[in-house]
Image (cartoon, rainbow, N blue to C red; front, side, top):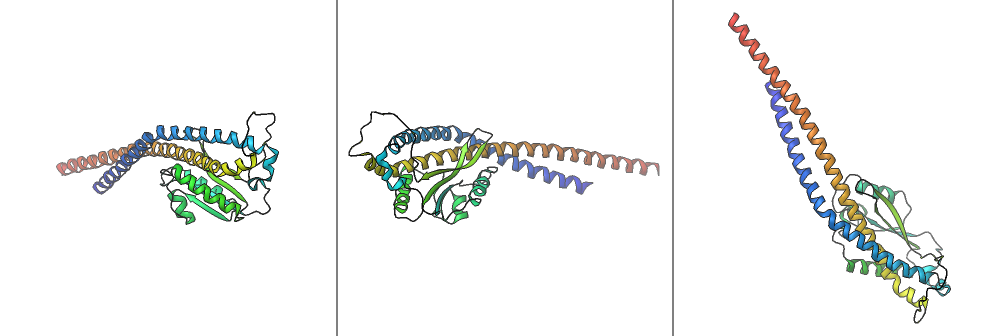
Length: 267
């Protein structure tokens, strides 16, 4: 009995230590949640504003000649895969990798340490990725697209639905699709629509990229918070169960000792 109670006490201390760790990680995630949501919403607003301009341009007949709007002649696909810098976030990273591996692709540009480790690319932090990083990456990607190194560009990221739900999905960025927008907008582009479109596409790609990165990071923080909350609750339930086992074992040991004493006195 003594060995049993000792082992249970060690197990209780171990689970209690783990529970303190999960609580600390949950608190860190909670502290990042508000700023992550603010940055996500700002990124969405910027991308939507830029996207509305691109929609006006792609609706213009002159822009049909743009190299960014030519139909893909091949199937060479480049994917930007956005994952987290750390784990312990439930199925966040696994869902992104599962979706990526289900697709056909010829090149991957990873963002986030877990994605960089998996696809062996240059390291980019998903949490610290800046607007300057996005602009530099977008301009380099657009140059490669115009040079014919690939035919399609997609971004694999995570959509923030709620604190409880985050979904991996693909945003197809290039080539641009013709907008069905009709009617006069009253906007005059100088020198012409095609020239303006070709000039703004790299910045448009950068805006879409930043939106996806910021939404993915907000999703990662939410997933980690929920995972740590769940782990903390499970740890507490395990401690309660172990404590019950310990009490029963201790009670059994005391009962056995009393029985031995009574038996000894009767002899």
